[in-house]
Length: 250
Ligand code: 13P
Image (cartoon, rainbow, N blue to C red):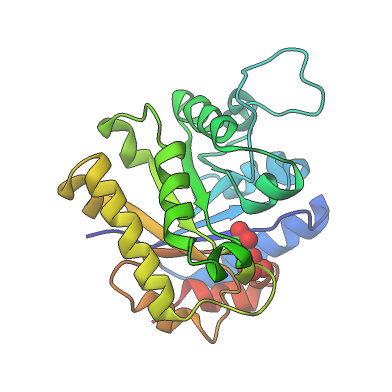
């Protein structure tokens, strides 16, 4: 009942020409997919070119982040209006690299989420604990807190346009993926949190992706878990063959 969403977060990789090349390879290798959604999130500089290329194709276009104001004196920032203008239908917010490298907290992330939803973008809200937090037995508390804070003032009707991505920080870019059992357990905790914030029906309808060293050789096992509804893929999304294999999980 939940359509899996496989998304590539390219982070700070690829020029415009390289982005076009990758997307053309994805389009030609994708085949006929109807039972899953595919999304690419290139850097801002490639969005415009890919927006035209992806029109009327099965691949959606998303941004990696967004600012919460629509326009104004905010040097370096990009708004939801601008993302819509170039063909984005999604944006990520709250990625752990935004939280850690750029110092973003839950309140700013919640403002970004509301701005994006207000302009008709779908949002992938990222949450996840660090290694120290996990070792201290705090993982569930941290993740639950991030879900609650990220969804402040979100109405039940808006939930349909939100996807949660559980990305344990220690699994990102390390090759050290969570076991499918640990990932499933945290996804179940997140769904429980959604049930308490909203209700059982809403919680069951929401998609929760896993991210952190998802690769062709672990995607099938991860996707077989009942509460894992997709993947947010970094490194393995930068090459057509590995991303296509992840999209074609079995
Ligand atoms: P990796 O797949 O490279 O671990 O990155 C995961 C990620 O941060 C996706 O947003």
